[in-house]
Image 1 (cartoon, rainbow, N blue to C red):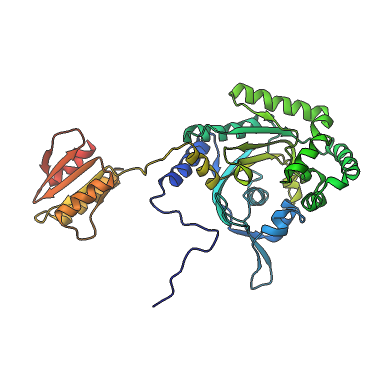
Image 2 (image 1 turned 45 degrees about the vertical axis):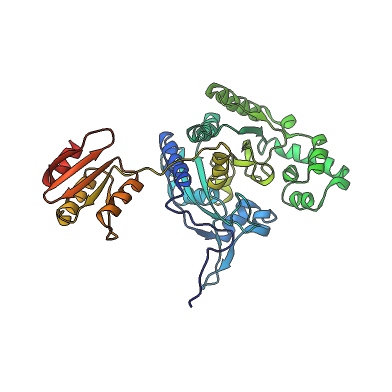
Length: 410
């Protein structure tokens, strides 16, 4: 008996019948198109240095979670752990001369090694929405509002937007110096995780999981008290635009992004799940990212949203989406002309009608059962040279087989 294989631990198959998964992805595509975003697809692996530069060598992503390997030429490559850095790399390589901002999105698998669990996969799918080339606070607000529109269309109501500004290269260094002084004076409250995060950036200590430490950090200086006038004005405009959109938010002074190229607006959408699955989307402005990977100084803003996390939010609402059904299912009786029926099916498809038929040798009764399971709104039964058209809510209509296409598309 041959060996039976299973999907690797931490991965999952997305099956044709996973209607909610496919509906979420289709809705993502529809919403991004409405907002003027165009799809981009970057390679599944990149030069390891891209992620070391953009995630920070001491970060958990680089330190613990990346799938890194040497190819046969000795080059260090890494499976894509997130979507922003590859899109930024593609911008530097291909898109600088396009009209700005470049609004690009991807829905793609990402790879991170970690303990699998509910909503947590080693291969997971993520929507990344990036606007590169504009410092306008209205772009920040539009990117945020885009995600709220996605949630609205999916029926997700249990969410809370947390919002902050982390300043820029002009005002953040002064704040980091103040925070370092506080951390030095309170070294005894820091655990191993906090010390590791501090090695990357003092700001990352606010991202620790220990609830006691998080409570202690409430007394630490907050970045909002150290913003320069330009950053204050930018944040005020972002908030004004969100108010105009009717997007509610909670100011969260401990919400940070630790690396130097992040600046100003940062946010998270938190769903009803607790702990690790609470964040269903997170983003921010990264005005120093393009320069950090070899491009000219270029502002940018965007977010990443896990598909599996969003599925949990949809599930928590008790919402179930159905797979779109067929328009027509064609049943061929024993005396029916199958060749001419298949020709009619091809013509209907060319006309934009979704059609299927039996390809498993089923009996007439079996074909009728399959027609019912298909969800088709119309069943066409071919007998001899004629076809009986059975539409929901209508009397049966018998036409010549040659007239089926005209009847169904007229």
